[in-house]
Amino acid sequence: MKTDRIRLVHVQVPPTYLPGYPRGLSAQQFQALLAPRNRERRRALFGAACAALALSAGSPGEAEREAQVVAMLQRLAEERPQSSWLWSSIMHRAAATEATAGVTYVPRIPISFGNSAMGLFDSGRARLMAVEVFRAYGIELETGAALDTPSVHARLDGADRARKIAFKLRGANEENDGRTRPVIGGGKAESASSDLDATELAALVENGWKLHVTSIDNYPLMDGDQLTPTVAYLAGVIEFLNAVTDGPDLDLRSVLMGVRQRFEVPSLADLGLGKGAPRSIGNQESLDEFELGSARTVTLRFNQPGSRPPTLLGRGRTTELQPPATPAERAKALSTAGCISALQIPISVREITRAETLRIRLTQVREPGAKPLLIEARSKLVFTPSSFDAARPFELEISLPAGEYYLLNSLDVSVLRP
Image (cartoon, rainbow, N blue to C red):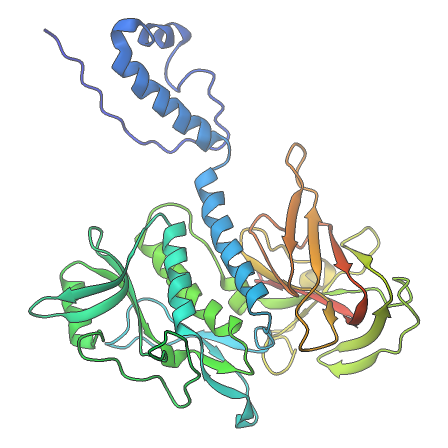
């Protein structure tokens, strides 16, 4: 008896492909394969057709991966709203050592005096978020994975033993109750049974392991800003996963190293919020105070016909841009499409101890036939997906309860220069 053998082959289908019948089959061939005697082939064909339809709809795997990471970053911004150093710090790649593996981005924070230093970032939270990033890339990790071999005695923070992919954030700043404490002058050394030293790292690499390894000492905590060092750490993890996995790559370079694209914000009077008396706060910014006796929604529109183009500013202690903006860069807004970016809302609550009560809706009309982009957030810092383009018109609705607020004269969006 003749036995038909069918082998499924995964083929990348162009996003523009709209299958009426599976690619390469005529209508007659398609019907023939649906005959009752070809039941198994019919099942295989159905699975392949579903995969092709999913790919033709615009790579849902890519959208899902990015959506998970952006949602995680936004949750961090809302739970840890202090992010004052994100725009003032400059990120750089740390030099590789024998005890590290993969890219490490380190925030360089321009402190004039030592009273901003509060120890090291929340390494426990960073490890949990790294596990989430791995999951977004389709990798489920065993956490606290102990390795005990003749050449390696260590505990990996997360590992997929079958694929030999793992990460390790070396050092400790957690007490016995599991809570992270600020540590001044560097993290605690791990025990020999837990730490992954340079010799053990080399042994794992030689055995085919792919690892991201760095130290908590790279991530200082300044003025309680947990977000900046955590995003820097996760950017290294993401770049590592881009290199060792298939599928779409994510890109946080705009958030970390992009310049500030500054859009002009209307005055209090133009917004109908009062006369105001703005005062300069440096870095080409001014701040105004206002009070609302009842709830109010403020709508801001950008890149409207006739509006002035945004200006480009540097990051770090000063806003000086190096090299200076070119005539083309001064003529119109730069596109953020293709990169995850960060957007700083120009309104904030005056009472520093009060929880953020803002409700933000960012909307942007897209190409004909595509649904408008809608982003909702509850923090001053909003992470935008790669589908958001700061070079096109967009709108912000900021819902405010009664209270006292600050209004900045500008809105900043991170962007990579061409």
